[in-house]
Length: 460
Ligand SMILES: Cc1cc2nc3c(=O)[nH]c(=O)nc-3n(C[C@H](O)[C@H](O)[C@H](O)COP(=O)(O)OP(=O)(O)OC[C@H]3O[C@@H](n4cnc5c(N)ncnc54)[C@H](O)[C@@H]3O)c2cc1C
Image (cartoon, rainbow, N blue to C red; front, top):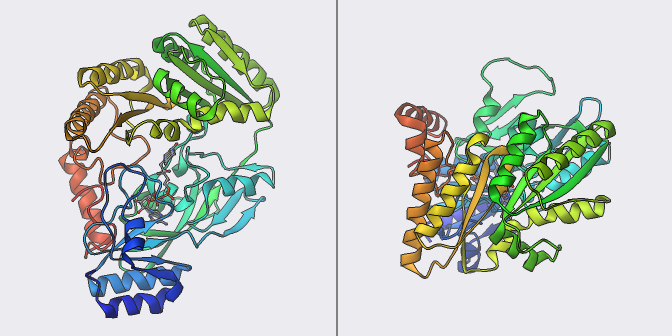
């Protein structure tokens, strides 16, 4: 361990002895996150309980020269919380209070360690709704969601985390406290600083409070599952639904490999011989839901859906939705290593991108499952492989390079929601260009002159 005894003592003074860990076993536990094949142990782990503690840790990092990696639940899929040399991992899960639900202004004020599902539960008690619902909603923190600008299954209609952040309290890398944003629906005073921190992957500041926008809860919801014998039919159903100016809250798909893995895992009764299933959900006023769901079923049938199942009640809807929510976990069971990406393309290019991914997997003799947010053009090609097989891993990396290049050629992006982190930083310059990279580096240097906060993420 390269932290001096004195530095550990001072960290202990800031957060208390119960909140500092540095045994070899504890360091291993915080050396990795949900990303495959990336790990490096931190020097120590500190659990913070207040904003002043975070501020003091950052001031100490600047004077003592150690690095700080903010961490919520560690469920990110881009290596965002994997430490580099000389790092302290700063965990926010003890800052887990919902400070306020304000039904008059439709807002919630929360600490960063609150699990995302709890926010919607608290909103629900007031007839309100917090829409962003990443697949990890029950385990990820809102601080992590803000730092990754996470999306979810309802993103098509309701947008992503950024669309719900009204204000932030942030500890800057140098330890100063910044507050930005208000409860006002309209607020254009100065640069939109909160937007700078949303999606900054813990590199520009540590979020300590979040003011969120809530919506009235939709009166009703209908969930349907359509089964197809051809992936192109599912893709065309999605294109047609959008072309008919219907914006459902959810349009998610699973391919054949994913369907089989999910069924084996969750026993939902999915058709094992289907090429694709499409999870469709519409919500809102009962009349609109009735009209939209009828039209969506017609469109799925017009594109040769073999079967369209409509959930009879909330319990069945939950069961059908769980088919999609459990996709990653189900795929992860079948091979030692699961490498999941989130290449994203304009919706019009979905069919082309899926065909390219399937061809690329076949060309490199790789096993792949594909699922994702069809309505957002956000795909999760997931390679099922074994990191102990270097030849296979080399082919996986070649395949991903080809997939990202294709996504960029089709007008898409290298990540729709998982962030760049360590995993995708080599691809960012191609997308951002030299000026874009320069602007990002200038921002980082300005806010973090000693490069102490989550170094090496997004770019070197
Ligand atoms: C099964 C599964 C399903 C998933 N489904 C989705 C999905 O549908 N959509 C989606 O977008 N993602 C999804 N993810 C990815 C992941 O859950 C999200 O990126 C989530 O937002 C991470 O939250 P976390 O609390 O785990 O953050 P962490 O993994 O701990 O951290 C993520 C990043 O945020 C930074 N960070 C954490 N807290 C703070 C803070 N308070 N201030 C500043 N920076 C901070 C970290 O440094 C890191 O860079 C999924 C992951 C899994 C394992």
